[in-house]
Length: 450
Image (cartoon, rainbow, N blue to C red; front, side):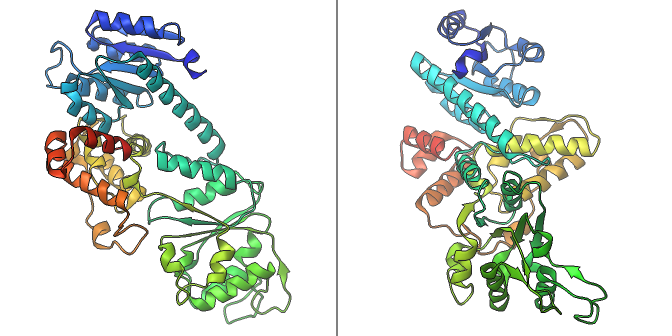
């Protein structure tokens, strides 16, 4: 049981609360440490690594911020971003608790609490962390890390683990910048072909004249500049994986040539009459809506069936909830090291500003935004004003998977985000404008991981 090995720190200025939680949790976990003074948090987590910190939202004015819980939450996130934090709050502080979730807290508990609810919440967090770690152990290789613990990414990981060991052809779908190439690489690295070549080709960028020579190769003298024999990408990937990116952008004539090779498992280099047998696992990717691919005037249906034994859809960043916090810590640490800067901490509001942006450019846009912030910031604290979002992504946004989604969940989520932004996170005003109760809005915030 995951509880048995857990270490928990409880921080509250009410001695009765500390005593009650210690008595409740002590028989269930490895260790429970209680702390009355939040000013000791920094030293406590410096000397000991805790799996979970249970943090009260209000103290006796030791920090003059107006919302001490958020202040100390940010301190913990800066010092130990991997530690899960559960906020404890009274009903009157519920808006702060929601704000805390946006700042990276794992969950919140209402006072007075129910013992079963506390145990259930802790167990869920520990189980999620355990499955996340085992998932990363099995899916990460060659220094490629797929970061995320949202429900939508968990669905992707489950599919990856099932599909990767097979030789099934996979079509990876998703908007630009979502990380389709990382998924393709993870499929290869966790397959029986992992010690064989992984060859990537951006077929959408190949002209008609280059398409056949790049994919199928050529013999010396096949055309003017063919001064020597050259293997095509199919032959180079023999025994391994061939990843054809932007597959939705190739012409109908190119589709016919590709289909012939996939059906016969033979390639004939330009200038040769000899067919070469190939043994590849095929992975394709596109940002085009599957409904567009289904139009036979644009894409052959028989080719779709050939490349799409299994499809994996990579969700847009705006649907990935708390993954933004984890990705932000990852990229900031990455670029701090790259540019020889000291470790950064985040000012309150930094993560909230990231979460309130819809990121039409997805993870790639987030990466560039954070790289710029690290480069341009003089100090060691990143502030909301350090985040500058490009207008390029908005002006060039095309007909990708969910540009104008009419999915009811997507419409509802976008409406909630718009109203929350309008009222700067005020739940009461937002619920009133949406025409629902506060409790109903809380349920939707939890549902969409907002």
